Length: 264
Image 1: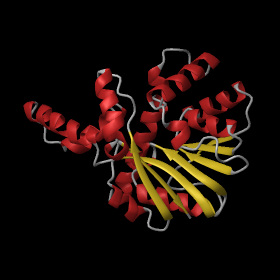
Image 2 (image 1 turned 90 degrees about the vertical axis):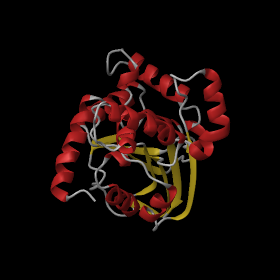
Image 3 (image 1 turned 180 degrees about the horizontal axis):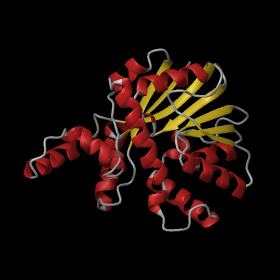
Image 4 (image 1 turned 180 degrees about the vertical axis):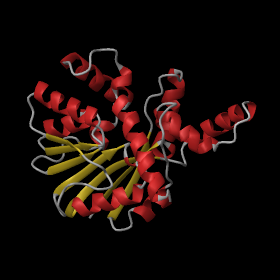
């Protein structure tokens, strides 16, 4: 476990990185905050992750109070709102929250958004019917604490839908040896596996972790009816045939996105 003092310093670095690089902005050159910008971000996200609507249940929570932890640009949060959920999004960074508020205003949809730390959520116990988080809690220093907060704010019988990076994935198995060789050639002594996971979100990303199913079960042992599946995005730098093979043979059990669902 990261020591508390180091944890706070690291969290500040994480906040600075994502404040400067809100997730999704790297895939478009359009002006941030315009309708065209939001449209292009959304189009790209679901082209490379076509499984999202069905697996993440965007249309299944009408009338329920839903919290997204780490809402980024609000792309997924918008889909839940379109599906009739009563949505609240939180993010560590001010820039993301500013863009989420602009986005909901652009599309004239109701939704709340505020800055908050996943490890210290500003909500009462038993506040939400659903808590959703996609690719976020592996970027906070104390992931078990963030998961404990998720449990606290979820109503009894409520549902969690989460994605964490998957350590036992094709992405890690194939990428780590390449990274290890590169570091050996450059005479670096860093952990190849952990560094390969970290740089998935950019060379300057200060923190990225991945977990096995058993590690997630241990962190989420208070939840019942835990279900796991994995998915992979369409890899833009792979040949089309390689993506087809991966999506049909490997993504559902060795994908890099470990999707967890459970009940409080």
